Every structure is written in C-alpha cells, then in structure tokens.
Length: 244
Image (cartoon, rainbow, N blue to C red; front, side):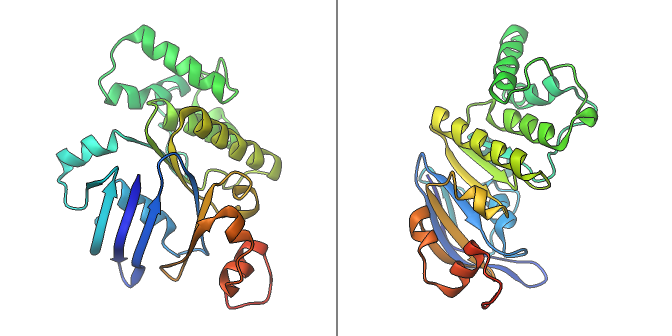
C-alpha cells in the first residue's frame, strides 16, 4: 500500500539515507528509532508535505513523487493524519474540528455531518463533546479528538505521529488500544510513529527502525523483539549499555 524506494532527504545534513520500505495493505506498522532519526520526516514525505531529494514514493502502486499540488490534493484524500501536537483549531468547537476534513472533501449535508461527528465521538468515548472548546480539554481528550478527526473520512491510510506523547501510562495504553481497534474495524493501512515503544509493540503487526537516517530493521513485531541486532535490541528492550 505504501512504498519508499531508495528515499533520501537532507536539510542542513542527511536526515534519511536510501530508505526502502513497504507497508502492506491493512497492516498496522510501527516506526521507531531514537530522536532525530527521520521518523516524522518520513511521514511528511508520504503525504507530499516534503519532497525527497532522491528515490521514489508510491501510494497504492501510484508514483506520487513528482506530483504537483493539485494532484497531491487528490492523493491526500486517501489519508488521515494525526499530528504530534494535536493541531486542533482553537477557534472551532470539537465537533467542527472533527467535521473539518469532511467539509474539505465537499460534504455539505449538515445532518450527515452531525451523524458522522457523533459516531466518531462515541468511538473515542467522548460522546456529547461536540460543543466543547479544544482549549478546555485534557491532553488525552485532545488526542482522542485528533483520532476522531483522523478517522472521520474513513481513509484508506492513516498516519499517526506520536499519538501518546506526553500522556500518562494508563492513558497512553488506552490510546494505543483505541488506535488498534479503529484499524481493525476500518481495515485501514496504518503507519504509526511513537517513542512509547513498549506500548506501541502491543498493537503492531510489523515494525521498522530508523537509526541515523537508515532503516536498520523491518519485520514482524515478534522478529523485532527477538532481533539480535545490537542497536535494535538495545532500543526495543531499553538496555542502558550498547551502541546508541
């Protein structure tokens, strides 16, 4: 479903180096790695917010690397995206935030908008929050509103950037369980970046690890946990001594 072929990206210095990666259709894929290893940049490349310096990017078999902004708009309609910092609009209510992607797609039937928003809020255990202001929500509630907005269009592909950042352990596990349930029910292809490795690995099908801009591991969750690669082993198991 998602494919990177030899993708490289640099700013002041190299960020991604010759990354080749495939995320199969219907897979919940976890992307991990130390800070500044290129994880968020990879997500932005997939939706065309950044262009690779080298390599190709394919979505459902279509090469989207060189598409213009108008063509990219069509491709982006296939995606849901949860940003690391929530990215909720403070000047809109919770309900209006969730409805925003549907309005962008041209849905104008107000009854249908209300129904879809209510269904999403129920799914994330926030029924009745339509009229709330985002500024009055807790961090966990904001995350759940972000999940509702990312999934309201029933997108084929959903990208999550640090969905549990800043949350307590109990709330963090609830968020991961929610995302896994949403993925199973929708059959979506999910690529999830998270620093909360222990909880991420409770829901993933496959795992990739970026280290110094290179993809040093790609395999099933079970293979990742059993990997003997010194960097992968140290990072996934939290070992204090090692090459990182």
